[in-house]
Length: 104
Ligand code: FES
Image (cartoon, rainbow, N blue to C red; front, side):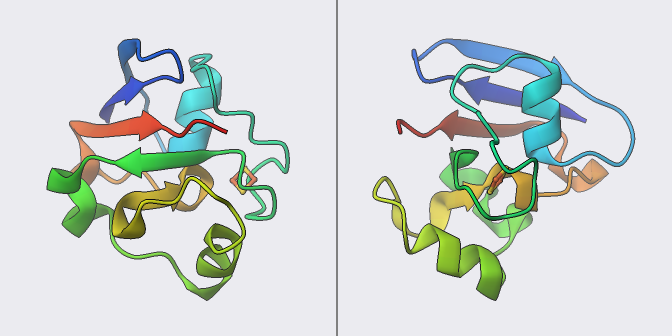
């Protein structure tokens, strides 16, 4: 699955990963700046916040209740496009995904 990240410095990086990965795990594996992921993917830190390109929101889907509650606690949330990267599983349908890493 190929994903383009725009990191916190505005630098665009296209990376690819194989297997059952979350978007956060792919970002960490490729050293994307701005994805701290302090809780390791437990949906409890919100330091993996990204803004999904609006063209992809239908495919990334909506946050579940737990993620929604976390998103409610962070400031840089821009409606439906804001997601926690650890809660997005990279399925083949997301090949080509583009996300902007949130400023935190
Ligand atoms: Fe902590 Fe995503 S890594 S909420």
